[in-house]
Length: 170
Image: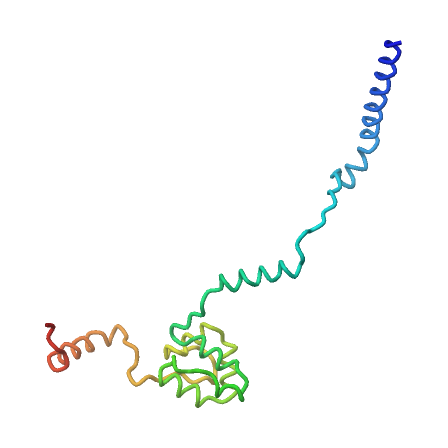
């Protein structure tokens, strides 16, 4: 009796393994054509989408770099992109007086052109160099930036003024 039970169990195992092998053999062309990946298991997220968004917003706010406005470039860009009624509220204390005067004398078309010129044009505008935007004035400083030709003359002038304007170190 044991023999027949073992024989039936062996035949059953053979048929089960044979069927899975037969199934694999018959499904081979379909797997080749449509991909043979197993379906992914069902996944139910445990976190609510709003909680995830709030967490991401908090991380962004924490990692956000402070605004860098070394030469007033951000101020110039904010002023040029602001609507005419709100330009009066723009804080321009970080700008040099000549840049401030030039901005206040410009009309809407010039401000719009400078705003469209981008950060590079604003940087050149603030430094008083040619920014290449037609119709936008160049800032004229009371003392122009030093060039290679001016360096020896300004050095001699500074050395001549040193005895009159300096104080001895104690």
